[in-house]
Image (cartoon, rainbow, N blue to C red; front, side, top):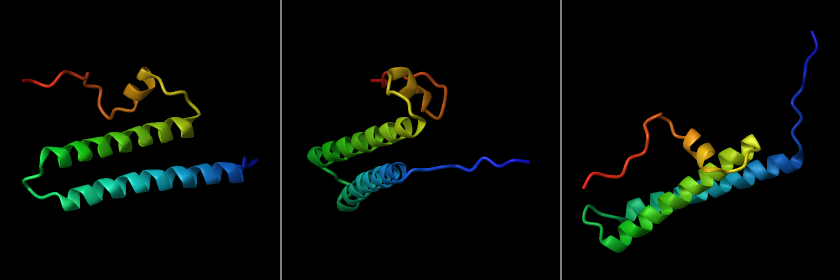
Length: 92
């Protein structure tokens, strides 16, 4: 039986390390924001938190596509969702 060893270049490893550091930094920033907020967070704090979560999601989406060697498209992003429930506008 022949084996097919996985070959990973240094540039790939460096890209993975860089991506992991970026995701970790974004997650730590979200954690810092959450740690600094109390129950009565003001609108500016909530806006910063929302922006931080958006940045973390964007980084994760880019990382997933980079690993798959895929272009980012609306369809490819929706395929990353953990459920097949269609997105709907929030109820008023």
